[in-house]
Image (cartoon, rainbow, N blue to C red; front, side):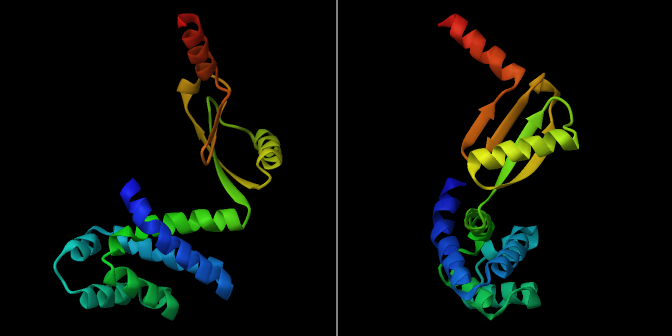
Length: 177
């Protein structure tokens, strides 16, 4: 997976810089998301891995995407096809979305709790996290009974483990030292 990310990064960066220049960040995000979903399709993935010519692969891929991709997006697909990188489209779309979130000063935060958070708790958490990260926060809440109590917060590379399970694990490690 990291190899695909390495391959996809320059394409995602180029697409993002082009989109910013043209003032079309959101439309490029939509195009890349759609193209990535097409590339994930089992039949399309088999076709892309096959021995068809580069021209045929790009033409059929563009036909499948039809009016969901504009002229610039079609050129982008052709460049990916010429370089044998159409299979990296899902990774390109993911990286592009990360560039867009950074550009929009947004961050996705995954919160795992032992019980479901009520709206008031979510609002307080969003306010605190927006202050900490200096970005607009989008919460993705989930429930895991193994957390026991407290929260585990994941935002990008940052993990804040305020769960009772995490505290017990740290205590056990400290006692074993």
